[in-house]
Length: 99
Image 1: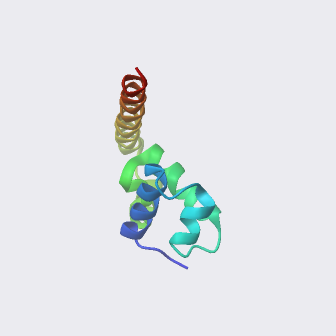
Image 2: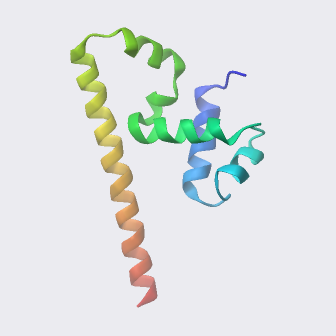
C-alpha cells in the first residue's frame, strides 16, 4: 500500500513525540500492518527530514548529480542537528525538573 507524505509525517511525529508508545503501538494506531514501515519512515525522517518521506523526491534524488547529493546531505545534517538540539533541550528540562 502506498501512503502519502502527510500520513507518513503524522505517524513519524506521533512516534517521535513518545506519547503513543513504541513502534508497535504507533503502527497499530495508524493501521499499519507492519512496524517495519514506520521504522523505515523514522530512519528516513531523521536522515533527510520531511523530504525523506516523499517518494517522488526520493526517486528524483537518485537521478540527480553529485552537487544535489551534497545539498541533500546538508539538509539531512541540518535536520539531524535540529533533532539533537531538541533532545538535549528536553534532557536539560528534565534535569531542571528533578532539582
